[in-house]
Amino acid sequence: MNSYFEKLGQTVLERWREQNFSLEVFPELTRIAIDETPPSENVDIDEMIHEFLFNDEQPFQGESGFGQPELIAFNDTRFYIQILFWLEGTTEIHQHEFSGAFHVMRGSSVHSEFDFVNARSVTPHIRIGDLRVKRIELLETGSTVPITSGRECIHSLFHLDTPSITVVIRTHHDPGTGPQYNYLPPHIAIDPLHSDTLTARRKQLLDVLEATEDRHYATFVNKMMEQLDFERGFNTLRHAMTHLQELDEWDEALAMFQNKHGELALGVPDTLDECLRRETISQMRHFIVNPEHRFFLALLMNVQNRSDIISLITQRFPSSSPIDTILGWAEELMEPSDFGISLLDATFPESLDIDIEEQSEWFIVALKQALDGDADGDELVEGISEIQAALKASCLRPLFS
Image 1: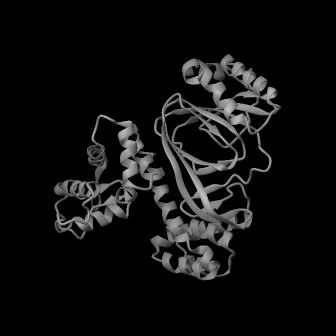
Image 2: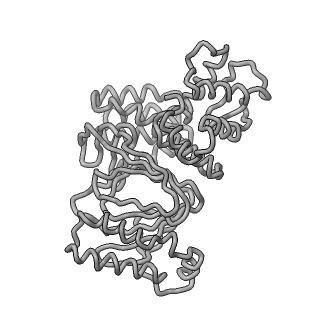
Image 3: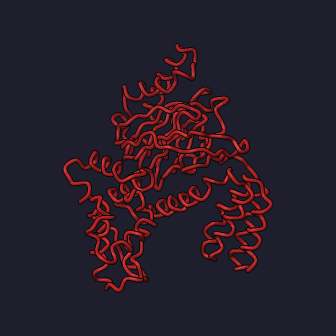
């Protein structure tokens, strides 16, 4: 592998040995080592790729589950250095069972950090609480961020460029810091590595019933909701949600789950609704490639209110009006559908008798009134409130908060 990473690895190893391999100092130690000679300034990426493709003398290539792909650039018994390529990468909100630091070698990302408060364990593999945004920042090429293992470092990354490349110096495993929970905002944490093969097979069997359009699908799910414990019931309900909504059977299944689990289930409806919204945004990455539009998607996924969205747009595009920027993106993202004009997943209301040629303009008027803060003001014209209701029900919801 590139000699730069061998030198960086040896530097970290020597400095950490002087600190008696203390896990407490490792994140800051690695951040300093990276920033002294940043990979973004010292590694020729094309040359690195060529060397990896044609030189067999490489460190052992493990599999961490991160990256598209992951390359191991340095490997020691205590830590290793990985290079992570991201093509469509949007990480789950997660914590780690390792510590270290990551560096943006190419591209940029929206980095969000969270706290999980009022938390309680339901089982060793699922927790309930309140996930709250602690900080959101734009990471440009050259940025370095420490990683602390455990629940003190809950974060997510939405990569804006294709590819984005990060360099990570990390321990193999920090004892006592698991499980490595994923967080489903606003109220659920789950252990993604927990293997419940019975639930997995049941979900696969439900997929068979869905594919064959079995008329008993909803009946079976409802009966499962009456019998299953919270963990298995939640995972099954989450899996079946989309098809139950298509069948117009969702409300009954959710009600049965809530009736069985009472207070434990209070946050489940909002959590599953947000899961669907975030998945919708994530899927949009497959056909939205413009970096500015991806930045907009990242804000819609990770920022909870209009004022913070406007603040981050101002930070990235200081010379432009943030409201005009949002309206410009909205115009660029609108496209015709079978039912009229759509803005991302918001479709123009069929109930309004407005020609398709004029619908884009009405969308912009409705959105502008919301962004200007007068969405409920006297200037509303007939039909605007209905358009805003469609926008609020879509992934654009944070713009109305």
